[in-house]
Each structure stands twice: as C-alpha cells, then as structure tokens.
Amino acid sequence: MQFQQQPPSQRVRWRYESAGNERVQIPFALKRTGRRTLSISVLPDGAVEVVAPKNAPLELVRSKILKRRAWIRKQQIEFIKHPPALPAAKKFESGDTLRYLGRQYLLKLLRDRNAERVSYKIEGNRFVVRVQAPSDTRNVRKRINDWYLRQSRIVFDRIVAECAVKLAPLGIRVPEFSLRRMGKRLGSCAPSGRLLLDPRLVEVSTGLIEFVVVHELCHQKEMNHGPAFFRLMDRALPDWRDRERKILRYEFSE
Image (cartoon, rainbow, N blue to C red):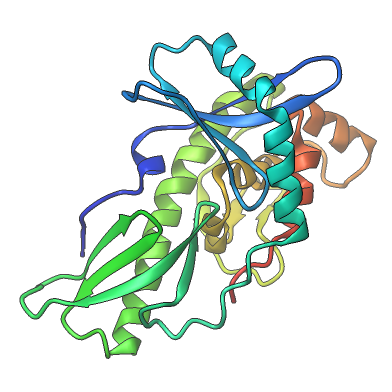
C-alpha cells in the first residue's frame, strides 16, 4: 500500500501551551512552520490550534491568542450550539464523511485502472483515494480501515512517547501499547502496566488522545478515581478537565 501524502499534522509535531492571565486561560496546540504569518483555528471539539513562523517568540504567540480570545470563545460557543452533523453509516462511497485527528473530510474515490496499489491523499477537506475499482465497496472498506489502523499506530506511538517524557518525573512507567476495539471504552491500563487503546481515538484531536493516554497511565499509581487520582492528573495534565468534557461529548463512529 502506497501512502502519497501524510496529513500535515503528521509531518510536524504539535506542542501544547497555554495563553492567559488571571481571568482566562486558553490551552492551545502550536505548530511551527516556514510560513510568515500566524494563523489561529478552532476545531469542532473546541480545541485551539495555532500555526506560527519558526522564529515567532512564544510570548508573541500568546499575546495574539489573548487579543483574539473573544473570537475564539465565540467559535467555541457556536460549535457547542451547532455541533457538526455526525457522519451517517459509511457506505465507503464518494461523499462519505471521514473523521481524522479532529477534522472532517469528504471521501473522494477516483478510478485508476493502472494503479497497482491503493493510494491516499488529503487535499484540503477531501480524502482522496485512488483505486482500480471504486465500485468494489468491500475492497474500499478494507483499504480505508487498514489506513486508519496504520495511522492510529503512527499517531499513538508519537503521543505515547511524548507522554513518557511528561510522566517520567511522576514515577509513571510508560509501556508498549496495543490496539483493540473496546466498545464504549477508549483505553485501559492493567495493573501489570499493559496499555490498550481503541484505534477509533484517531478520529479526535491529538490533545484528546493525549488525555486518554495520560488518564490510563495514571491508573498505574492510582487504580480508582479518588482524590489521589485527581491530584495526580492535575500534576500530569493541568487542563485535563477541559479535555475530558470535550471527549465525553464526542460520538465515535461505529
């Protein structure tokens, strides 16, 4: 299987910061690129993403976010009032809605009789798949599900590695992870330290995936949801309550 273009968020790592003052705190994901201007986006789950020039000082980025806090809040409220329509049951035909890392894409199937392998490309808000027989929905379904599984391994591997650095000072060991569909559960961590993640998590933003990983790993030290667990979460991920509210509102694909 040939993957022509990794989504932009796969090529450049995001880092998580916060902008604020005594009255307001705005968590945001920051990506630095070669662009000359700074852009601020609000995702459907309310997360704030910032793309900034490589040499832009962090304090300048925070200042820009605070100046636009009214607009950011307005966008977040609009998403709460009018959440994006849930994707209908996938038919794996052109026009289907696919969700990946907090964004929605329209599936576009293109016939390529000379294609020896299925290829994938994200173009704006479209997820373009070239395949010999677009009408063979059984094959298209398998190929797209294979892509999701492949991407979930790539994304989770990076996030788990970043969590390992963040949790090491708390004495939390980060084990290898496995993928498993778990129905209503998104992750689990056994007393032995075995970490399981549901591949459907790749639908949501990286910040929400990080919340699930940190939540499960904190259970290594605190197996229940008592005060000690919440104190540990506060140390590991100070804005975890906001992330939890967002992921609890999310409806995952079947």
